[in-house]
Image 1 (cartoon, rainbow, N blue to C red):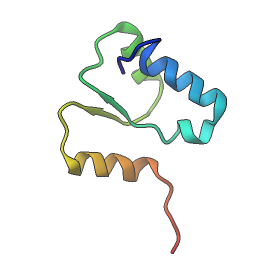
Image 2: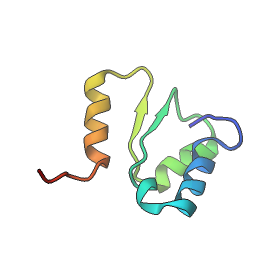
Image 3: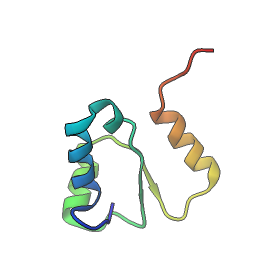
Length: 72
């Protein structure tokens, strides 16, 4: 969530403008949602957030949640 030039919320706004379907497949990775803007953003958008540190199982679960099912 914390990145230069606006962080996760700014990244998500730009991604929505460019490709809304890709924006819906976003998983945020953070050491903590500490700013008011970040907390408001997480409350407004039901996107998965992984808190540091995380394990591989948690990561794979989040990826499964956002990736569309593939047909064989």
